[in-house]
Image (cartoon, rainbow, N blue to C red; front, side, top):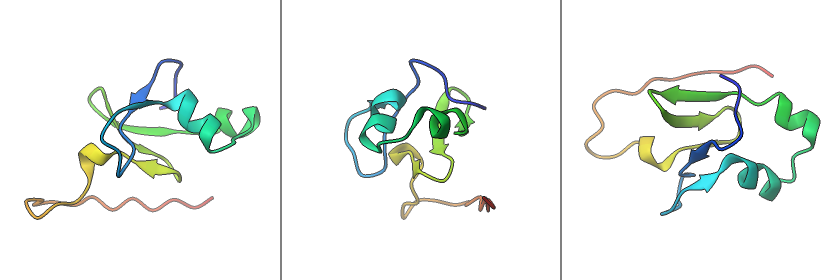
Length: 74
């Protein structure tokens, strides 16, 4: 889905959560770039900001049993 105002996720390597709008500002993304961004979700949790950052909640760990590989072409 497209990202929405108020979306929050936990960037890989971070302990706390961050609003996507703040993440985009930190990444210095233009309005045009932000409008093109998609997010991959599992239920209500954001798994991946496509082509930018995945969520720490969904990182591969020693206990991981299955991995889904998604390839994008941009």
